Length: 411
Ligand SMILES: *Cc1c(COP(=O)(O)O)cnc(C)c1O
Image (cartoon, rainbow, N blue to C red):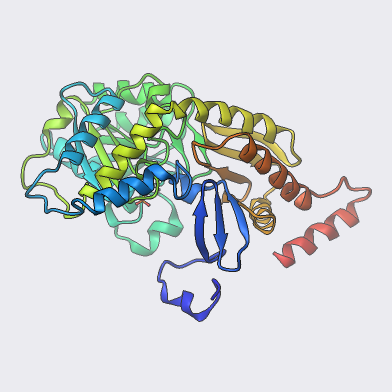
């Protein structure tokens, strides 16, 4: 059975499937034909301990054998522990609170409801979002995702969402228009191609939100849980949000999302206003505690920073690469031509998993546990993939154009 069998049609998550994966260990995965791939996408910034890590396996197995689910009429020790841990790591102090969901989208839905509760007190309804933002696929989160392909087939969206451009002027103007309940920002936009905000943007958003009594909500679904080399990307900027959402790496492959609130935003929800059957169930909580505890005990964030720096240096030497963006082990690799899809395909052929969020960007988000061997292996395979795509220096215009059009046809 392979990805293009009729059976794959049964899955409604539309879009091409690259391979049928059957097994993983560390930073490697195997497909059904026994081919081995170096996984530098990590399930889209999820598998922070790689695959089948003993800490993950032990947490799932022992919790499954003890207590795997209770209703939300009860609390469990693991829930209390993860809430306290997230408050400590985020630096909320006593006032902070934590809501546990099952995914990034759901954590963001919760944040949207938080914005509504806050705005409801003053009659403000507007939510500001960033150009290029990705906040998820459910109707609320989708309404905050201003990408035509994702959103427009499903209009009408949740109203009063205003898009801000990546400039301080646009930010000022959006607040000056009034009526703002909240602004939601990804500190680094992963899906947009690992795009960074202009210098000082978060600090300015914080100041304007304060002045207009609006909430600053950070979507750290992709950047949080240590991915950028700090527990949260906002800690790199010294800005304190009113709320932050998490998912992806927090469960290292087990579905879990979280909303963390700071200060008075912690008092907005009251009993009956929000809940989830599965959110933060004992299995998910046990895994998140084990994963985050391991990252902390092993000082893995040091490795995230060190390996991230090595990768950036190594990648800068390779053909087609013009720059790198992002932080820690969330890295955007900018190419000099719109050939990211071809590079990804060539990498796949060479047993390397990466992705191409835009036409000229490759994104990597490997495990926090990678070492010399994985860095070396990546640079070698990625360099070969780039070289296979790079157009040789043209001796005259005609052969170069011919080479390019031939490649595009076979894509
Ligand atoms: C992945 C992602 C989401 C959606 O999370 P899901 O777990 O897929 O629902 C939301 N925001 C950002 C920034 C993301 O990267």
